[in-house]
Image (cartoon, rainbow, N blue to C red; front, top):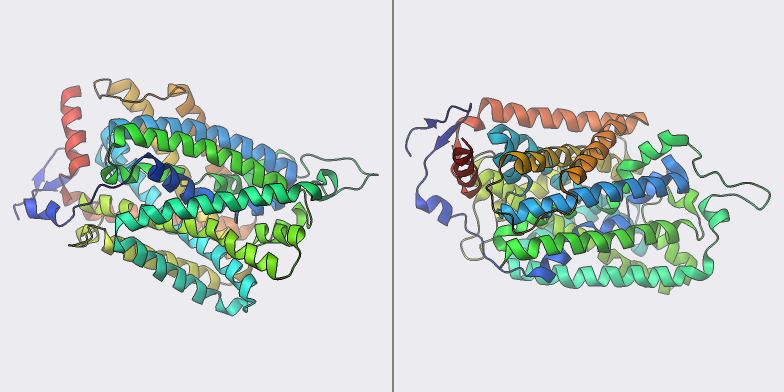
Length: 487
């Protein structure tokens, strides 16, 4: 391999032979419905588990306000990303946007933050899967790590088998999860009592919308984000979509609208029926608790809980897919060790990245449990995942603004209707949420500090090693081309 050649930007690139990219090829398969299902499926678990922890911090009223604020942020985020992904249809997603706008360092710090999100998000979801399976089969909590391991093993294998199977399964499971939510919304109607179960008051008391004040809204923001977190991963499928410039913006915008309806429906109906918001605030299977109210605690309720599990499985499957592609992209460009971007010779799936990312997520989940957080593993991991996501969101919105102002020559098949104003609004909310992560109970603050240390180690790896060994991948070549045009 030739010696590294300096670029004058604090990084060095190494030339690679054509065989390098041949060993890292992907296969196109996804259409607009597959992309919509991938976006919705990646997030839909947020309606089944995780969001409910926010009720303990903001109450029912505070959680409503928090969810509305988060919906505004994701509107600005999704439409901005839709514009960028149509203009830069590379598997790198957030990294490729920031690479073009902010240079190699900007690309890496954005990609590293997103990587933390996609490693930790499946870990949060697998805790929910373990909770549902434990409730269905009435197994002791000590067996939860076994459920986690089996879930990781099954869905890594499915994603390695092939992109066709992965997308087909995503569509089926996503529609099943939406059907479960629809059944829940309709079945909950006769049991609704907003004052009693949502606000926990009797007729002699008055409703307090913000029992913990404005600070309650701030502390609930990270959990409201769980209704939408990971919709932004769709650009990672760009090199496996038939028409990414056309279909990815549609998938993102339709997916966002679908998730908005589901978020407010779930928040309302799961909170205002027995056992009520105060009880489900600490539940590891909140929708199952609601199904017990609707159908009783017998066999029918367990069967519905098994069906409800589809929501968690849909997201778990979709985000493992996204995490594999994200690691693959950063590795192909040399930001991560290059062996991580090797793809299966026959199936053309990033099997090494899928395996390594899942092993890391599983290890972190076990570590949190063994550190004495058995009762709040999901909430602790959620806080860590949101930390990475907010940094990635903030940097992506900065990238959007820079691309709009400085890179006018880039062709934009789709333009965000909210423009720079939408990106700025999303940036402000992301920054406020990032700050809010450091407000609250000690265990959550400690988890976020741990995530920050993880992030710092990743930055040190790039500064000391990887920045001297980058590769001209498609994202890098695109960025360099337009930077030269700008200069």
